[in-house]
Image (tube, rainbow, N blue to C red; front, side, top):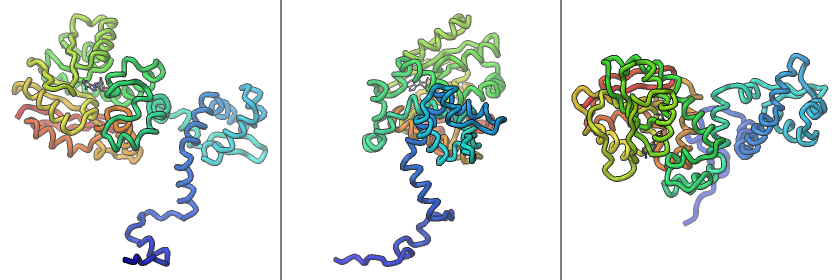
Length: 370
Ligand SMILES: C[S@@+](CC[C@H](N)C(=O)[O-])C[C@H]1O[C@@H](n2cnc3c(N)ncnc32)[C@H](O)[C@@H]1O
């Protein structure tokens, strides 16, 4: 059977199927080229940061910028090297060049070099995800974190956390802590509202939250529940801080059949933990917790939900993080909308007694047994 070939542009791309945002074709093509060369923009920026070129350019702003010759002399980098890096950086709107050849940072360049969130994300992308992302198509096809082999031979990144190189660990932990540490202090008031005596920190990681609990309340006991590598790390950090009397630990791998946790917790705390699992796994974890809870136990979940973000930038970061889960972490989890969590919480036999906003990006769900 013959297929009619549309002649005109509007026939070929009917209006209702085009994006509603208006953008000139030339601008759209440039944006598409920026994606085509995105790794070039990324790696040249990382290099200019590493070589301290961005710092020097910023420090020279009061003199109206700095030329390639002066940068070359001050930093001992070839004029050729600086030429290729800065030429491209100018086209990528990261630096500007004046008529006399002096470079200055644009606003984008300033944020790229000095904004804390951008830097945490950039180091995480570079040191943890960059090589692995090459295997994204395979990860989507198999449901496995196919990029993880670039870091080591584990089923999930969590099993390998304690064995990553120091640089990889630094970037991973800075990324992880950056998105949770900020809300711990605010959360403590609610966590201690009913004077809990025993708190289970599920996915306690490096023991940072447990340490804040010990400093906040002199009676609290904490049980860290995590994979062995992280558990040992958390217990060591807590011991070093002098709280070994008040901490205990249980090794667990939630992906193994029939995981169990003991009864007796007044609070079960899960911060940025459930997003490391698929929906079926989350249901299994929550149901296991429900079996250990009594009518008074509070299960507290902290997450950054995609449907609770005010700023487009936050949504963008969370969606990128989902791809990290896909290709590097486990192959089957993501940053979820709150609606998905609410359904899973109810299905597991819990009710949400409080739904609270924490800081600008986080949500705290306080759950009780139904
Ligand atoms: C993203 S970190 C969250 C750490 C911390 N709660 C926070 O708020 O920063 C996830 C934690 O879950 C643990 N975890 C991941 N997969 C696990 C598994 N299969 N079994 C047990 N713990 C796991 C990791 O070891 C890590 O400590």
